[in-house]
Amino acid sequence: MTAELDRYLRFDVDNPYVSRVKSYSAFRISFHDEDYLGYIGDLLDILDSYGQKGTFFFRPRYTLPTKVLAESILAKGHEIGHHVDKTRDINKMREEKTILERVAGQVEGITIHGRGIPLLSPSGDGYNEQYLSYCVELGYIYEGTGLRREYERLRGLTILPAHTTLDRHLKADIPDAIMLVHPCRIFRNRKVREIFEEALTRYRFRPLKEAVELEPARHFGSE
Image 1: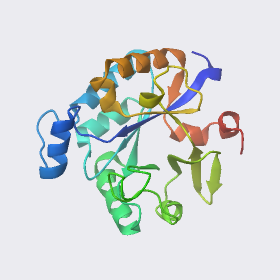
Image 2: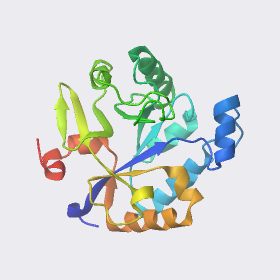
Image 3: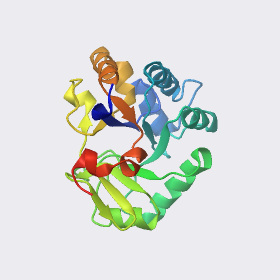
């Protein structure tokens, strides 16, 4: 791995379990057991074995990590970010951020869960025109959903550009500076797991916050 092959690793932790059935139960009836988010520990072990770092975006209402898990993630050099469900109401965004920060400390990055056609998105919400201004008001350092094709800044907010979604790309060559992985799919699908581990051998991955701090023009072609 060389500096020319640096990439930034984004995990969207959408589901509390690898199993779709158990995740659905967790959403509908607040079902939790000792395996809740257990696969994240397995993912940390994989990353450790390759010496790689990334950002874990949790949904505070559905995939909130325990304090022990959050401390383990941070102690290993990874970052924790906010995978927001409700983007039309700044008070709901603030509430979610507060919930996450109680277990993870200061949260500086945000992404959207369910971006797309509002009626079809899982949150029934998705992107809206005021969302980025809300991010500024709430003090986020960066927005990492990929709402823009180019790197941009909006007052104190850095808007990171589009990414490669590994579990759709299904190739270990990553054309964009940011790679998105839905971690439960690593453990559901052997092919995704193999490609993920191959990508870990090709690139040096960093948490997304470093995409803001370390020479963004070098990676995204603008300042």
